[in-house]
Length: 195
Image (cartoon, rainbow, N blue to C red; front, top):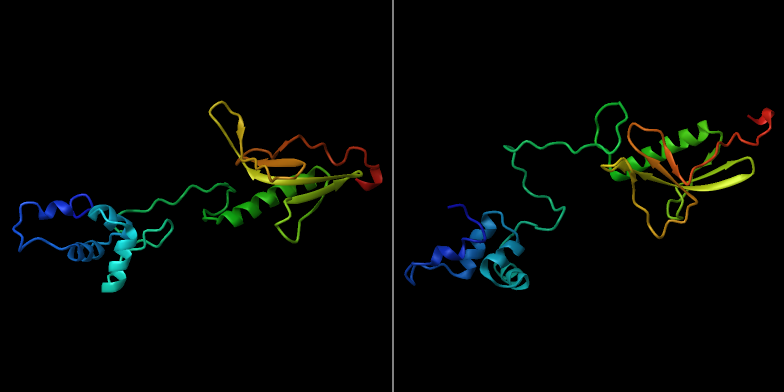
């Protein structure tokens, strides 16, 4: 029978009192099998704090059960690489969320430049705008978002109440950049010698 927190207490059922395991022995058994403190507390029916106290007192080391904690990797289970948020046609590499955001910003910069806008990037990224663009006397602020299409083809993206930009630039892999509200061409109204 595999060792899990559901069947640990059942091991004592039907055993004589000399053969029954103590809670400390259970904790050592669970820790040696790679369980976390939370899993041990659920299996024994005691609080996580009590498990932590016993583990500290007796030097028992549990697996870190926090989300994102480094867990032992089972080499027999092949790991599937996550789908990239952006497909560029280049080599398949995994991007961090920060890198993906910068790539999206550069796609929007290229699109705005092609539309005739002068584009400025902020020095600090904590001011609420990803880009500022200027053309023909108009100054706009842009928030860049990755987007996808739902089942009926509508664009879906995250809007935050804290966003203060005038426009959203929505990047969908394999499509042109979409703007909400729509941005006019920066060439409109410019003298020919400035184009």
